[in-house]
Image (cartoon, rainbow, N blue to C red; front, top):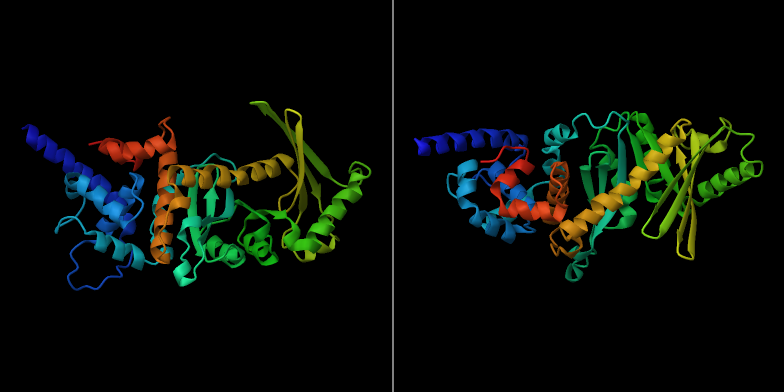
Length: 390
């Protein structure tokens, strides 16, 4: 009787996991149909589970699968047993990264849920995989541009480039992956381009774009406009101000946000689609006797509403502090040595997606500890996937 109960429970678990496996049904199998023993969806799910549990390459995925043979044979369709390391490698180096990501779309939509009720802030930024360079083939490290849903802690998409400077062409491609309608898109100065602003505006989103030296003429005119009105404390222009202060660990920080309306006749409005406001952030930090002072400038299609502007700027920093930092600390991404471009990009996506899964889990453990627990405890691993334990 007890054995029958265990069987029923395992069968139920397979049904639950089948809902996740179904996300990959539309994924086109790049392999030859000859001697095709292992279902593509099962290989992909094994890789996903293994990365969640600490694996960082095809060999590690296979080793983890061997240690979880009984679990995987019970949960997945594996009529010929576990796939070999070579099968795992061939699958992940032949799947088109854009198609691979697209199959996570429904799962990502479920993770997003109702969000917070506020306008979503989508932060776009790049990260270099420093260990992925291949001097023998004359390849520098792979650079990934991703979009991060800040409120939820969720990567919505990524595009790979060979150079950081190629972000200018990667960002428009990336933004086509996601629904920007109604969202606020924040991008560092590399993405402050008229075509990108127009793409966001035409798609129904708003932008907050950093202004730096790569747009020298724009930077000069923005600073000139702000300084002109600073002379009389912005008496002749619509302005909003907001100040935030933080103190702790011997550090005192003050951020002053200033948002100015842009007049309809200001010539930059002809170049930048939807441009409505200029934003300024004045950052002051005091640590002991050392003081730091910095001023940052932004152009935006947001209407006057300085707290919305301040929230967008704060949220943008999270892709660096919450996403990129976590990838290096939790996954040691900068130490990854995968050189083959497609497999490197697909593993990078698995890291970003599983990081999002870990962040959704309500446990209070650190991300590093959660990932270790995925490797130690099958029940915890399934819980992170959103399933009940065995």
